[in-house]
Length: 258
Ligand SMILES: [Cu+2]
Image 1 (cartoon, rainbow, N blue to C red):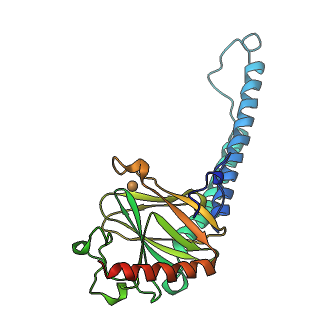
Image 2: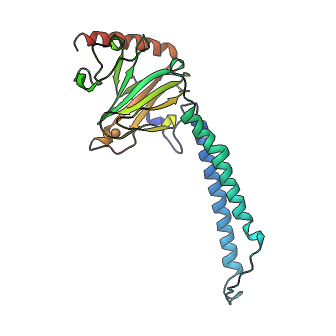
């Protein structure tokens, strides 16, 4: 399997690999173009003032001012634009990403557990049910501490630093941490969310491209923060089903040695 693809990054923003990446980039583009236009006109206006009100032409400072309502036009335009950007563009996109969570049965569900300095992924396996986890069962061979007495966990898949997702299907990721605050970040998905110990944050993503995408930790979490990375492999739905079968079978074999 290909290890993270550097060609996903280039000039400008990274490759757009999720259904909402276009929306996020659209909002960023509007903001940057607006800033560029505002900057341009301010620069032109400043040059106009420097020339038009140069000392030889206007030697005496005026303190009273002669502002009329017209001087507020630009302020009002920028204010209206900013309110529009926030209310009509930003908040709906944010709400879509944060609140349009797929229901448990409709999506591929993965538990994402951050740990200094790895990403641990738990899949429910073919039975669709997650086995319970408990700290008392954590072992080198059982890094997530899946309860060996819980039959639901017998076919669960544990993957370290490798996240597998099917293309074109929604994935519901439940984020938590074992130790300190980490932040789950996949630039190509435009997805970033803190992993907080003792809490579970659900996030969702719908990959629209197959390929390998880098997972980084976006929260300084200790001396090994720099190497806390992984890869997200987006497979075709058939390949993903195949992977689920194979990985689960391997885990069950592994379990007998647990
Ligand atoms: Cu981290």
